[in-house]
Structure formats: C-alpha cells, structure tokens
Amino acid sequence: VWSPDGKRLAYRSTETGGLWVVELETGMAEEVYPADLAVFRYPTEYDWAPDSLRLVVQDEILYEPPDLVVVDTESKKAWPIVKGGIETWPLHPRWSPVDDRIAAMWGNLGPQLRIVSLDGSTIVASNALLSGGIPNWSPDGRWLTFSGPIRYESALFQSDVWLVDVIDLSTKRLTYDVIKSPEETTKSDINSIWTPDGQQLIYCKGGDEVWLLNLKDGTERMLFASPGIFGSGSLVVGR
Image (cartoon, rainbow, N blue to C red; front, side):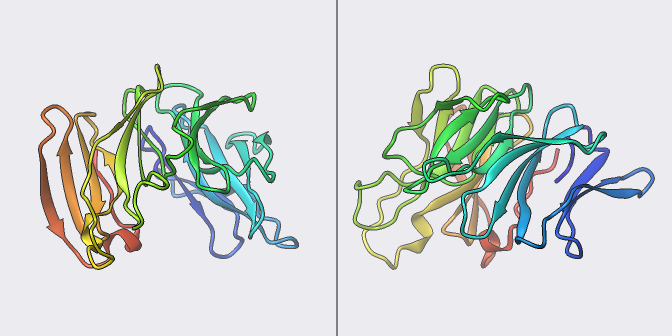
C-alpha cells in the first residue's frame, strides 16, 4: 500500500508474516508490526493515515474477531482502538485522507459501515439492512463508497455501488441492475475506487468488466473486460 506522500510502501512479509515499510528512495525496509506466529495472529489489512507516518491495521487470528490497531511507523509503537468481539467485528479499515476518522465494515451478520474515531467511538453510517464490502473515501474526505446488497430485497445476490455523505449520513444507490437469474453474473457491481479528482468512480461489474461512472452526470461506460479482474486484486487507479 502506497503512503499518501508516495515515499513509502507498506506490505506484509511472506517470510515473517509481519507488516513492513520500505523507504522507496533508499530501498531500506523494516518491520513495524510483527505477527505472532505462536497463535497465528497476523496483520491482514492496513491503510495509511494522511501524515504517511501511522497505519491502521486489521490484526486477527483466523476465524476470530479482529482488532483494529494504530501503528506509529517511526517509534514502532502500536495501540488498539477497537477490540474484536462477538458484536464487534471490524473489517476493511480505511483511513480518511484528510483527518483521523477511519471507515470500517462492522458486524458478523452482514457488515454495515461505521466511522471510527481514534478513541474507539463509532458512528453507524449505513442502514442496518445494507451490508457491504470494502469502503473507500473520496479524495476530499466528504464521501464514502462501498458495494453490497440490501438484505431481503431480492432472492438472488445482487451487489450495487452506494454513496454515503459522511456529514448527514445519507445513503444513495449509484448503480442498479435487476438480476433475474443466477446466470446473470455480470450485473453485480463491486469494488468501487475513486479517481484522484473525486469526480468519477471505477468499479467492477460481475468480476470481469471494469466500468467508469461519472458522478456529475450519472453516465456510465465500460472501460475494458478481463476475465477474473476482480479476483486478481489488480484494479488500481493512478494519480
């Protein structure tokens, strides 16, 4: 994961299992948050603070509720902000690009969007029936998007892209395709990513197509198709 200033890269080591940071100018790398191999505890997801010095880490043992931990990459000190539990199951933490708010999906019955402060307090930011995947902040920190279904709306799984106003916490559905049969796999919209100007979204449709949504006029168009593009984890938007 690139730091906001473009000078550092955070990654999980395949050798130690811990979280490392490499300085791109010098090539020097060091571990900033170790795994605990004795109990199979690993940092599984992580994201940078806007200062490019701190990271929020999803720290978990397989099949157990994860913790959210903040790591100071300079001092190597870490402190938990959310402790995982039966009703506290934070996933996919994403740090705001402008302040100390962290978006995460919450719960084990169908994750809903919450905004977490560094003191551990949370604000519910999406409807209880609306569950979703990875949240993404707009470049100005005003909006969040995620993809997911509304429970009980359809007998078939259908994921759409949603927009959340983080000020008034209103939610708007941005994409919608009615799925009439299980064979219509290309109509689920997933994995939305903002363009750097904050005016457009790029998302996967059905896992094989990449589409562009213009937020100003609502127009959509397919950019390209590539089998398995969603599963490959290779959808990246350049600055």
